[in-house]
Length: 126
Image (tube, rainbow, N blue to C red):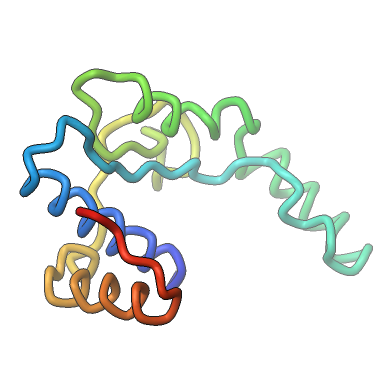
């Protein structure tokens, strides 16, 4: 969850910086929900087979449906942050979704941005 939170923090900071520059470009977040991909491929065989059965048959949606929120965010002129519209945002067609209160903390967003630049030695012109 920490890496996903960092993705959101960085995205929201980038979006704010782009808007402050008057850029027509925006930054959005999208998530696939539970998509039946190769996530379990490196698990021990017994765990992989059992988990794969339940994951594929009862929980996850296909990778094509998992891609829909990202495609919507990339192509909708009025795009927002998207995720699956079904129960628990795990399956279904895209809908506008919200993220945690912590992901909207501007102090943390700025700090992550600064630390990212310091650690990578890369600065962004926004």
